[in-house]
Image (cartoon, each protein chain N blue to C red):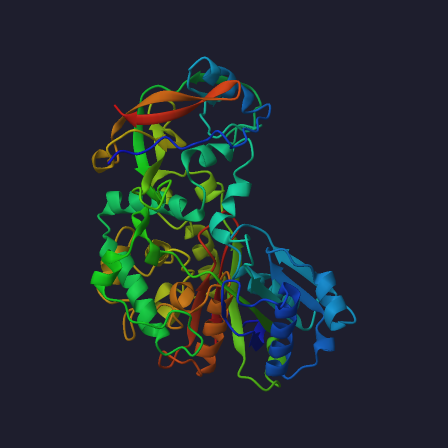
Length: 386
Length: 139
């Protein structure tokens, strides 16, 4: 294990809203509220922020500076991509701290879906390109049917059952019962799961994550400064954003080699993050796994080495992701039951687990893994420690 | 219940110089896939460089027999609330004789309960602008 250079010292968020209900607040207003909450949590003045890191979702550092009167930035960067980069904000923030380009970096994530702007249909506009048009003609209009192709292949190749996908959703519902702001707070039975309408076979409605509005922000500074700040530091032990041509544009490409196809595409970024942190899957106490679609949780558990390739279904069905299981997953209820802010709520939960103040606290949690979405490169992940 | 032919009449068909040969062949009801003329590596979708050797020289060859690599069954509401939902089947079609390249296309007019991975497929064509869009059904 190496010595981490950067730590998360502040965490802030707006309330969580069902899609559209954050109106009339604007997106920047939500971001501003999250940043101010994170600064208060860290015990710093907003003027101390000198770095802004965000994840590709259409907001600009300049607007944030102007809105909150941040006097001087020395670092501003965005993780590129289309869904995979959320945990990558911690990689960029740590890079800024390690190279002394900034002293107080705020990491931002925000989701607001108003009116016709919905992620579920957002791929339609991406598809109107000379190569994307094939997906459009095939009826692959949202991310759901594309993920269904991957899930279907995994079921065919390894015998994975829908019961495994159901268990991911049911576990997330059970965790969410304890979460004060969870959008879906109702236990789910296996019968209810199988009674839910099919949207994109083998995915039923319950396999899709929530559509919600919120903003979250995190303050990252040096490990040295963190020791003198009010919150228990959460060290960025390792973070990575990357990937390879063998996954590439993932569900926009669909020509991955067979084993890679029936995966979440995270094997390279998993290797990178474990190497940087100097730990192995056995060291991880709690995993915050990007859960936009329930089957991709099963596949990521394989990619990140919690079980063998092809055994994710049986692993999950055996109770591994539950409290006391081999690797508790998403104790906050995740995107499936608590709230979906493109991975940011997973960072918040990791911070709370490692501060020891989580609502579904994993006893003595020391290392937390946070993953970004299975999506086009760059994918991302971070390993945090207390 | 059978899968439907998606209505693509309102969809745009953008073409660039790298996809043009595909649509020229499709106008003649020929399904072709690009192969690198230098190193003979197949690639899909069409792109300006061979990802194996970076050559820009390409040859377009017949895709050959098709089989189903993966699929989804997408449930869409019927045209009116009284009518049953419609089934659109996006399929990932594999061409074993064209380097195993996979092509995403609708699986149409096929009994959905009979659609399985590995099934042999036959191509048919839906007219679109000056050319045709390939769709597949169970052979």
